[in-house]
Every structure is written in C-alpha cells, then in structure tokens.
Length: 124
Length: 135
Image (cartoon, rainbow over all chains, first blue to last red; front, top):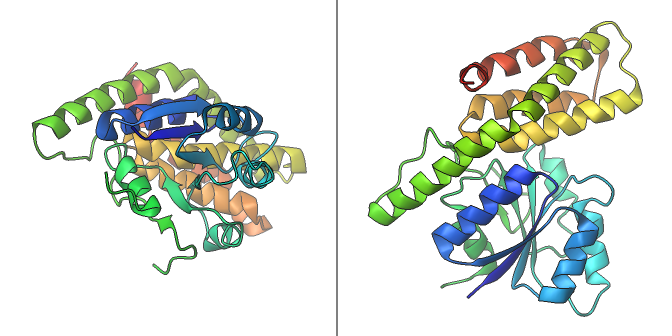
C-alpha cells in the first residue's frame, strides 16, 4: 500500500486531501501541519511520496524541501508541491529545485490521487 | 497553456462539491463521502472564513485610503492566497477566481490596482453568499 505524507498548515486542505487519497486510491495517509513537523514525520515514517503546501507560516514549502534534500534518510522521497495557482513565474521559480512535480489548488478530491500517480508514474 | 514545470498538472476546469459528476456506484459512494466531509468542513470553518472576509474588507478600505502598510499587505496577501486555494474545493470556483485576482494585486500592487481591492472584497463575499447564508 502506498503511503503519502501531506504537509499543509490549513486543516481543511489536509482533511479533504487525506480523505480523498484514502477513499479514491486506498493509500495510507500521514499528515503534518508545518514544514518542521513534516520533516520529522518523513524521517520517522519514510513515506512513498510527500505532498506539500508552498505558503506556510514559518518555514515555507520550498525551504522545507531544501532541508529534506540535506537529509540522506529522506532526500530520495519524491516531493510534489501543492499551491494556489497565481502566475507562471511562481511555478518557474520551482523548476530548478529537483521537485517531482507541482499540483494546483483548488484540487478536485475525486482526481487528486490520479494526478499524483500521473506525475510519479505510479501504475497501481 | 504552456507548462512552466515538467511535473505541472493543471487544476480541473470545474471543481468542488456542486460541479463534480462521478461515474459508477463506487465513484458515487466516494463522491458522497467526500461531499459530506466538505459540507462538514465548510460549516466548521465558517467562523474563520467570515473573519478572513472581514479582514479583506478592512484591508480594501485601507488600500482605498492609502493606509495599507507593508505588514498588512502581506497579511492580506496570505489570506487571499489561502482563499484562492480552498474555495474552489468547496464548489465556489468564482470565489477562487476573485481571491486569485486579489492575490495577484497584492503581490505586485500599484495605486491603480490597489484601488480595486475593496470592490473585489465585496465581489468575493457576494460569490459566497449562498454558503454564508446557509447557517
């Protein structure tokens, strides 16, 4: 069973995304409400992928991703950023970071798992 | 639209509890389950939403009077960003579009665009009227 960690400071986004991925794909979902907590959960649980918000109070998504890349225990885990769509420049600045992909809010709860699978090349 | 990022997946044109159509019984069950949670979360988050709309109204007035300082602009930007990312999930696609417009203005403000913030805050509240009046 796939295990995915969702990192987002917004409670409702975490809850809907978690339910969506559990109900539509049967994945096991872990959650964290900050970048620091996300790094801690990722190191302890070693999920198959991480779905992370960009704009979070304190440490933002890209900075959290950079910190993850410095940790050999979790640097191999594919990370997808989840962000409200504003301008192309916002996504272009993520292009060189080494992310697995970027998804946009608002997401459709019925197709979120398909979008993640598509980006990561997951067939099951 | 040209993709700026190889793994970029664009959002669906219609999202949210009111617009989705599922195929098959299992998908319908899943949709019903998700819709139930969305309705519960909407109710739970209404106080926070109302507070955010009130703040955007206030920030719009400050922008009109030329008293929108930098910390307030950043707070307004954060609120607009959060709303842009979540309202469509509940079926309020127009709310997401108005909030996105506010976010773009607050990100690169000019005196001309800042003057429209107040009316956009009013538009945003109007786009959510059905959900705000439901309780």
